[in-house]
Image 1 (cartoon, rainbow, N blue to C red):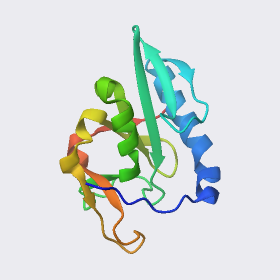
Image 2 (tube, helix red, strand yellow; image 1 turned 90 degrees about the vertical axis):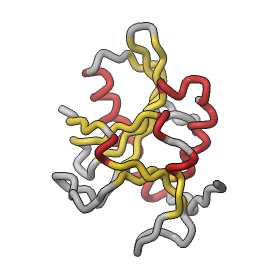
Image 3 (cartoon, rainbow, N blue to C red; image 1 turned 180 degrees about the vertical axis):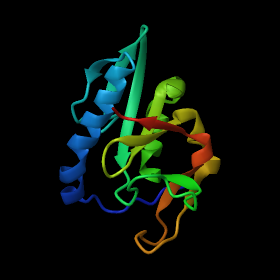
Image 4 (cartoon, rainbow, N blue to C red; image 1 turned 120 degrees about the vertical axis):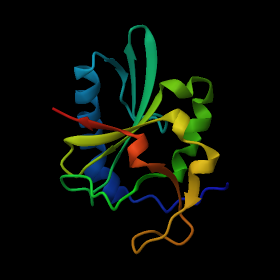
Length: 149
């Protein structure tokens, strides 16, 4: 499926990118990862190493997610533009992870790159979603809930 990407919103990026990366780095380091790179290069937000394995992690913040995950939100929606990362790391997709943080940066859903399939890529509809924007639709029951200490 072709992906539709909404225009880049620099003001949102400037507000949430660094705190999102720092929360992710905090979690990865607590899990025993050594951070290799977190500089902006338009690929994975964070590259890390653990047990001689290289990992690629991408992080998004869902500002509408406050405290507990609302059970009526049956799925995570990861922007379709992330398809370029799935393609970039296709030979290492088992080591590619996507994290969706809440607004407080203290909880996240973890989705493995193997879950980011063509079948999961669909248009989404809603009052805040531009017409035709595509997302990976991942049931939250198939993701891992992470608490960031």
